[in-house]
Length: 218
Image: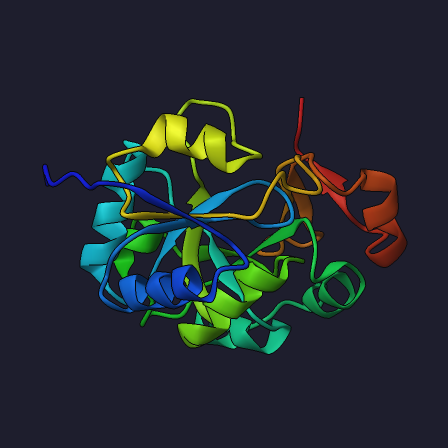
């Protein structure tokens, strides 16, 4: 896949830019936009060709799965085969927000999204534009940080453009991300749940919702 783009940047408040983002996503293109944590780059998760394009955009190794952002907690049912008992207390307390939860995936989810693995990572962002785009695509989008793989996660559209200019057709500029810190990641596949990455939410705060949380970090 060698196609390049003349990357356009629209303010996140520009309705023409938002409408263009929705159209491009529906057409299987990849779009960058702000979230509450860092800028994300996303595509329609039900189009395997779009996910392949997303890997190309980021130069992301294919053994790294792509997370899913949802518009509501109920939309997790689109990609999760079932929800472990600890899902409800965590989602009720921390969504929308900077918490990614790893859950068992439905077999209908394209293998390329999860690299054939049995799980999928899901999060509901606390950002009105991100939620609007996700809802417009049916409630779930494949989204990861809007940077070349191995580079720092971007918190401004300028940083996104520095990495992805010519690789995406559109960036929506929503200013600097409020959090500026990647999400905390917890695996709910294990019992008890396991903290996989420290991030926007502290371990102490998480344990108020799920006291049994354990850490698998060095």
